[in-house]
Length: 252
Image 1 (cartoon, rainbow, N blue to C red):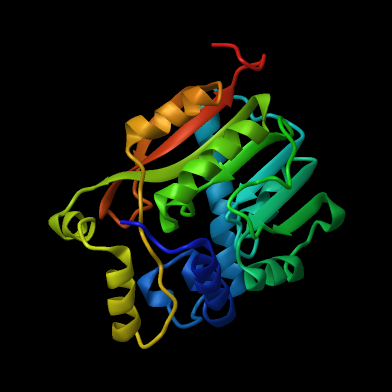
Image 2 (tube, one colour; image 1 turned 120 degrees about the vertical axis):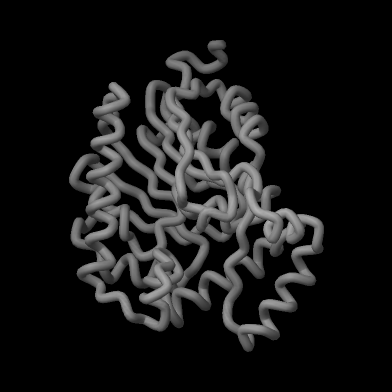
């Protein structure tokens, strides 16, 4: 399935940011229609970072210091608690409405920077410049031709010895999703627009695990931990990858 082009992807998430931003980020059924409170919503980010730190400790991995990037930051749900652990945090999102809200909720001043990224790459960051990169429930909402490029960009900007932790589905695990993979995405999106009366569309895509691991290796990455997760609504088999980068560029 081809998936949305980049401009349409941005338009959809901008509309989510204007209409129901908190639910579009943490899509619990009983919270649709602006039923999240900001306090409980941001607490989910605090809880997620606490679980992240516990995972790294259990896995015997040391959290690097310096700079962090929250890719697909939305309104800063995870970016804000990451500021407790890093000198500088960057949040990146495709939607202007999300970045506007993230800046409104920023409690860390100049230590936290939010960036509107309207490109299918991360050229706003230099090579080897970010010590920790975090990306969950984001790559799954874009077509594979974009998620592949962003994975390559993660490896480019990750500092040697840094950590990259991301999640992406691998393959559908029920017959409905398998059938959908054979239907052109444009047809599905048109159906969803009619069904939901013009509401924004949230696509679900993946990359095969073997391909993801290949992209990691091509970027001089070392896979430190791989485990299944449940962030793809149990409709896909999804994995969380924890990766570091060779201390010397080009090392095998």
